[in-house]
Structure formats: C-alpha cells, structure tokens
Length: 217
Image (cartoon, rainbow, N blue to C red; front, side):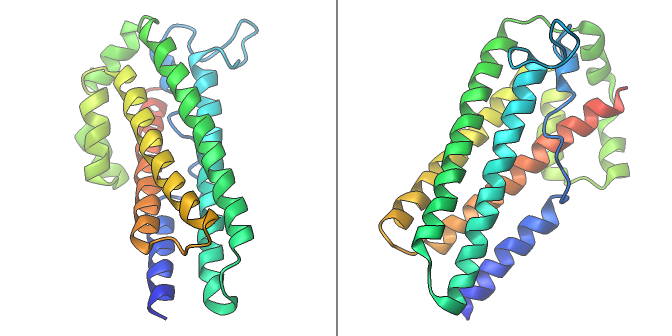
C-alpha cells in the first residue's frame, strides 16, 4: 500500500505541475534568428533552428509519454504483480526517444552557435517585463527565474544549452531505470520520483520559453 501511495503521489505531482496540453516546447524561440523558423519553401525543415526545436520537442514529449506508461505499469503491479516485459518495452522506448531528443538538441546548439541573432528580437527580450508576466500568468517562480536569467540578457543559445543538459540528465536517469528493469529488479522509488520531477521541470522550462516568445508577437 505504501508503494502505491508513493507512486500515485508521483503521478499527481507530474500532472499538476504541467498542463496536459503543453505541446509547445521551446517553440517560437527560432524567431531570435533571421529565417530561423522557416526553410527555403517557407515551411519548417529539419535543418533549420525551428525544425530542430520541433523535432527535438517531439521526441522529448514522446519519451515523457513512455515514462507515463511505465509509471502506470508500476502502479498496476500493485494489483497483479510486475509485468517486466511490458515495463521493459516502455522504458526502452523512453530511452530511445530521449536519445533522439538529446542528439537533435546537440545539433540545434551547434547550428545556433554559428547563426547570428535578430537584434530586434533580442532587444525585445531584454526590455520584456518578466516580473509582470510571471505574476499575470501565475507561473512557477523558481523555474521562470531560470528562463528570465537567460532571456533577460538575450541569451537564447543558453536556453538551448540548458535544455540539452536537462535531456542528458534525464537520459542517464532513464538508463538507470532500464538497467534495473532488464534485470527484473523493481526500480527504486526515489529514482522514479527523480525522473518524474525532472520531466516536469523540463516541460515547464520549455513551455515558459514558448510563452515569452509568443507574447512578443
């Protein structure tokens, strides 16, 4: 029973901290770079900053969905015992998707490092009223402060670097869970809590970046 209560608490925290439809993860930040949001034909391609952001976000969110499934299997094990085969399938998918997200963000960082900023957008970011925005949106102050520290000085590349480090950390946590699961060992609850917490914080961070850029329109 204690294990069930802990896992339910993890899931509830994850659901409460992040809107269920927070599908715009670091999107819109591509406007900080001239033509960063579009390819030659006007649409996003995988070789543009906007394309990398969209693709990286896709795999990150897929990994999060895999982790949700894994947690649901942990919860159901309280009733019927652990289904290690199903758990292994879910965590393997979570790892693969996170590896993809991390690799794409590595490419994004490299591309952004050699792409000039649109100084008009950077000026808007520096002049933006972050305190009022946080208050009006009732945004998590701890996480939004991280966004403000980067965007408030026009450091969009730093946003991508920070997200890359979050993905790298999540990948190592997922690999740890994967190792236990493959050995038919029930994952440590503190590791599951840490994974959910990191997913939640990373989703919020990326969403807040999108909200700021969207408000500049």
